Every structure is written in structure tokens, then in C-alpha cells.
Image (cartoon, rainbow over the protein chains, first blue to last red):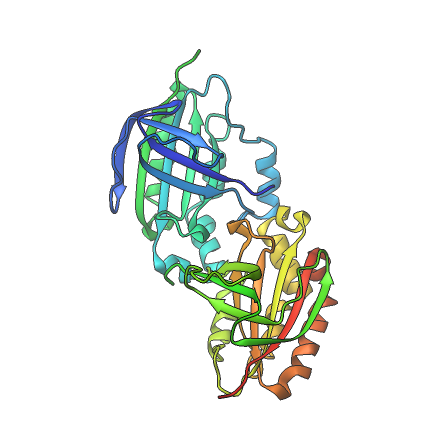
Length: 184
Length: 184
């Protein structure tokens, strides 16, 4: 778990082709054609529309029991047939962040089943969560998802269900960007 | 809770005079004479020995019940008779950060009484916690404490007790810097 900042760079370049761009809630960010994901310091002088940064970090809500269940089906990025992706940056409300730890856990899992419902999709949807809040970024988290072309319906059901949850009442800004990667 | 990075700047300048400097565990940082605390971007070209940065953030372990008890005795910095201070940066082990949320909570409070024992000292010791881990800093947290001159024995007992706890087995680096401020 060495420290590394991952940058999601929206613009005219990058391996991922933007297929759909949806402002779910709150202020927009500009639509872009392509997305580059980089853990290196920016060296290129290429014009970029926006850069969203995040870091992997420790678990915030997951219990040991849940962690052990999740580890049975590790979420791997870069599977060759997982050529579709989604980038979902989210900002939660001030009210959310002022809640105590047990209140946030209760809303996230006991009320919203974020961990247990999400884990049903692990075979068809890989994902990695990046934390941005302590970095002072515009969003609190960035989640990156990868899935096969025939997994997009399942992914839509996953995000649709979570968006109806109690937890999502504390989401004040959300963008949903769908992407695809060419097979070489 | 607007975003603000606080810098603890060790060197030859600043309002706080270093009285004692103790490397509790792990790699040292260089001893300095004075400490400056700043939320502004560094503009001065003054030579500094080190800068430790952190951000206030959401509660990580505190339950609603504990939060409500803590709010009965809010911890205020800058009390005029609280002319003594301690700066304690801490880094925890990789093992700690790989634990699930309920495991860390159990060690921190149920086994080590970090919150309940610490709260006994709220009238005599004010404190503020800054998070540094997601910023990629050398330490994971920085805690800043203020207390009156006759409160130093109580403060010593507080930190001595916590250092014997189960939680502290997961501390791999800790510095304890004691400071004083002149009254004007």
C-alpha cells in the first residue's frame, strides 16, 4: 500500500473512449472525448479539460467478515474482456461528513446495503475506489469500474439501485461517464 | 468544514518555543528551536528544517454517543492560560491499515479506551487532530495539544497510558515535541 496519486485526465487523449456522459447531480464538468489514467506526474503539455485525483486508502466501513467475503472474489482491473468502464466521481454533503462513524456505517450498509448488494456484482463488475476528500479535490471519491460489454445492463442495475438508497440522499454531486477501450 | 491544509513548520521561527524533543519510536526528524503553525501557502524564504502537513477531516471511529459526550466539553485551542503545547506526529504500521474498520475500532476503543480515556482530560488538555495519510506525508496523523503549565503532569499521564495500550503496538513512528508560548 505505497502512496500513489492516480489522475483521471479528461481531454482529447488517453486509452479510454468516452461513450456517454451523464451529469447525475450537482455542477457539471465539461464533456470530453477521451480519458487517460495516470499515476505519473503530468509531463505532457497536452490541453486537458479536467483532472480528478485520488488515492487508494484504508477501508472506511467494511468489517472483517465483509472483507473476508470480498477477498473470496478479488476485484481485478485490466481483465482482457472487460472493455467497458465507468468513471463515477461523487461528492457527499456536509451533513454526511458531520455524522459520527456508526451513523455513516448504518446508513451505508444496514440501511443501503452498499457493500452486500455491490458484492453480488463482483464477478461481472471490477472496481477500485479512490479517496479524494482529504486531498481537497472537487469530489470526495472517484470509483472506477470495468466490465465486459454484456455486463452493462447489470452495471446499470447496480448503480440505479444504489441511487435509490438512503445513502444517496447524502450525495450532492455525481457524474457518470461511460467508456470503452479498443481491443488490440 | 472547508478544506484547509495546516503546516507545522519546524525551524528558527514561529510563535512556539521548543522546550523538549523526544523521538519515541522510529526514524527521527531534526531537532528545531521554534515552531510555526500556518494555514497559508509558504511565502517566506526562511530556512525550515521540516514541514508536517495535515487536514481536519471527518470522524473515523467516534460513535454518535461518544460524539455527543465530547460535544459537552468542546476542545478549544487558543485559551489564554494554555501556554504549553505538544506536537505529536504518528505513523501507524501497514498491518494497522490493512485491518478492517471494525478491527481498528475494537483495538482503538474497546481494547485501548483511546476515546473514553482521552475524554477524561478534555478540561485540562485541548487538542486537534490533523490527518496526513491520504496526503502521502511521512506521518499518518499530527495531533496538536494545548494545556496550562500546571497541566503537563496530567498530559504526561495521558500519553504514557495510551503508549501502553494495544493500539500503540501498531505505532511505528512517533515524535513528542513539547512547546511553550510567551504571554504578551
